[in-house]
Length: 109
Image (cartoon, rainbow, N blue to C red; front, side, top):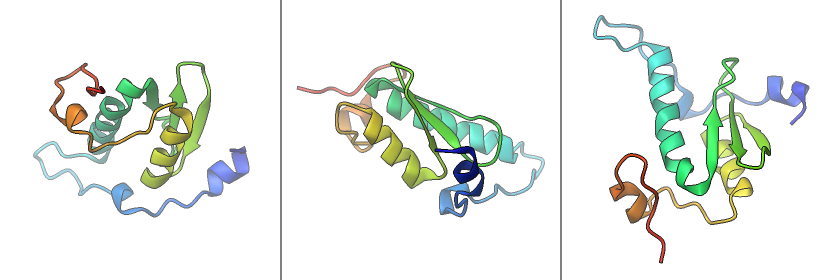
């Protein structure tokens, strides 16, 4: 994606809704974003993919172990990017993935 497309990509998606202001319970927008990022990383790691946050806008960068990267502007774009980089079909509801502990991958027969 070129720089202009990156900057002007749509940013309105329900998953990117701003977090409520800090209520004193420690819920801050950056913390919410980092929690989401950790969850996505855990789902995509068994597929050999990584997700990073460039810290600008709502965009995320999905990359594979070969160094190929795709910029995703929202959650649906993130899943499309992940699928385009993965040699296997990505199923975020894979029972093996959901039941795996931290650091464990999905069980494929």
